[in-house]
Length: 94
Image 1 (cartoon, rainbow, N blue to C red):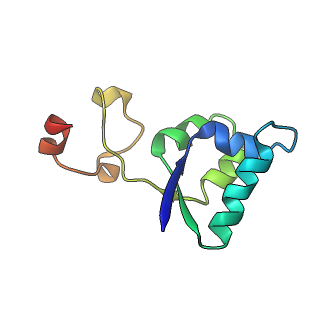
Image 2 (image 1 turned 120 degrees about the vertical axis):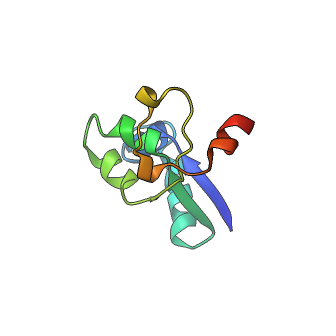
């Protein structure tokens, strides 16, 4: 099964029928509903959408969350220690 991660704009556009990308994104969700693909969302995307809790945010929270691999300083992280995936070595190798 193909796995797809969507960013904030995808969730915003699929909730806006006037968006230029609405039809294509709607088709992605149809494929998900048919079991052809599996959709994911990152903690970063959820953090962006959380600033305006609307239909796009609600839709994003219904999708499985990707494992979070910290990049950058700890103060820049959007996840908690419990949500971190990988090891310190993964971070050094990345």
